[in-house]
Length: 212
Image 1 (spheres, rainbow, N blue to C red):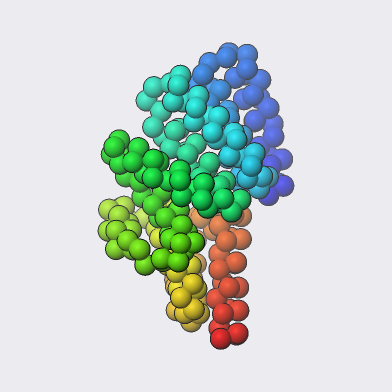
Image 2: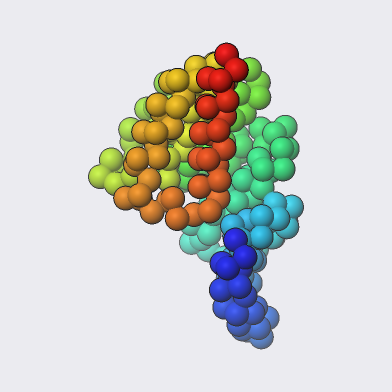
């Protein structure tokens, strides 16, 4: 929100000045990625986020080494920007290559996040919500269960969406309540973006029950 944007302004300005003065590719890539994350989280400017994260990914790939985390996060936020702009065809076209890259490098975090965050939405758009659902469940089980991670959040989020799509309002509401109860210990509820998405899902479940 606006408060977070104000807090981020001074550090970003300082990082921008330093990066431009040193003209070092890694710093320029990190700066572009940070600006993209701020555009996503605080400004809610999806187009700007996508452009900045494409720029950061290109810098990391072309000029840096040992930057798997940086490339992955650039890709995550770029794909999120496509999703939130409703560019599902572009998202569906980009996702396979991103998944293959994660699988080829043995990056379970990237593979699980990409699959659990984006694949279910694409399948809903294709009217095939059950497609390969067992694969996602298996992938989720590979993620450590010692804590509640972002991948667990998106798996449960996708389940609520699937139930809503199927017209199962009561089951969706129950699944939503289960998801909400797990969030405080993961601190994910402190993110405005997640709170808005969860409230949106809750209202959808309520409305479905009212009008069925």
